[in-house]
Amino acid sequence: MIRDIYKTMNKFEKGKLNTILNNKNIHNHNKKLLDKWLIQKKNELRSKKGFEIESEIRWSKTIIKYLRQCKNVGEWFGDKYLDQLTKKDIEKFYNDFESGKIKNKLGNPFTRKSKDDYYSKIFKRGLGEYLGINQICKKIMIREPESTAEVKFFWQEDLDVLIKETKKLKYKIFMAISFDLCLRVGETIQLTKSDFEKRFNDRTKQHYYKVRIRKEITKSKKERRISSLIPMTTELLDKYLDQLKSNDELLFPDSYENYRKVVQQISKRAGVTTQPDAKPITPHVFRKSGATHWLKRGFTIDQVKSRLGHKPSSRVIDLYVSYLGLDEEKSVEEIQTGDISEMTKKYNESQEQKIAQDERLKFLEEKLTKLEKDKELDLEKLLRVLRDKILKEGKT
Image (cartoon, rainbow, N blue to C red; front, side, top):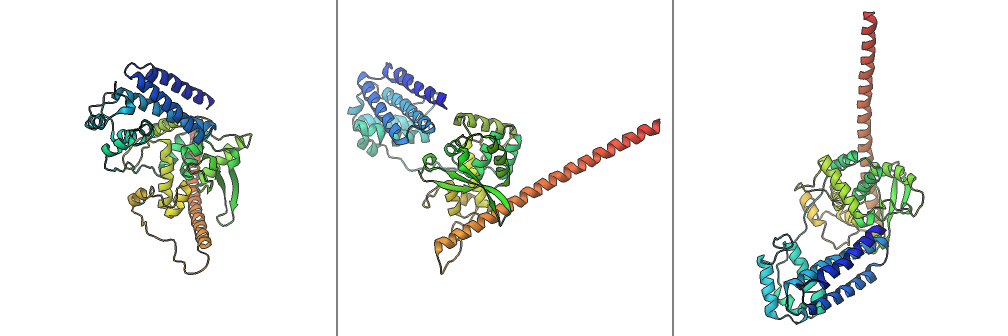
């Protein structure tokens, strides 16, 4: 990870020199403006996101993205002063950008998503605000809102295939807890041994792990605790956590890029793609798939939101509820008297216990079936040996 930071920051400093300060296609006046804004933006990101290793990698990559965008903006407007752009200048750029006359480095028109990124983060805010042109941009660059969210997940059966295809225990664990606990990748790769507490449920008669997602690694900056519910996750964690020496040791000390590549290789080898459009598996899809799995298994929408770390008002999960054909308005229970929050909590706990018990039964049934198959194979092998021995003795 330390190597990642130096590599990323070195890339930024070199990139700023080569793509902006030494760029003959950007006016000298604009070079100074862009350089000053990038330095200001870098300091803001560093102050906001902190100096932890993972945070530093994140803001470093963000500032490199701004660097590329600044280079494009500087080249698009040529010899015009960016802080003195007129309504006519911006209108011409907007029309060319929308019509596809302005192309990306591959020679293709920019995608809708990429255009929206420039409009919202560069022209209407950020750089545009710094240059004093954001108000003109807001009036000219008007777009109809378009939802970019899409359903993308895989089933638990696919997870089983992926884990079976994986050799290293570390990668098995990465996939299992990302799916089971519905974690963001940034949360998963910052978990330490001390975040896991093994417990025993008297009702379901099985062990599980209570996992602490520390506030400093969450997007919302609020701590949450999640129970592992899939027995396979508990079994894998038992083996893996014993190998870690220190409580502060990271479960996944490698970079995000490493896990992205591993997941792609394994999913390609296993022939697993996302539902419903058969797209490649990425680390983030495990989180979405876990949420879909628990919705299908009977979790309420609020329970899944809590597992995801979403606010109660969040509507992100609605797309999956609609896709699965679930009743979004289904209430947990009509409560006329008593402490509502306490009763709801108890109900949610009982639901989790029931689902955990079902998962355990399913796991044991699969194990029993495997044992029976192995027993049949052993019996056939024994009969073959006896038959061969009898035939051999008969010949002699």
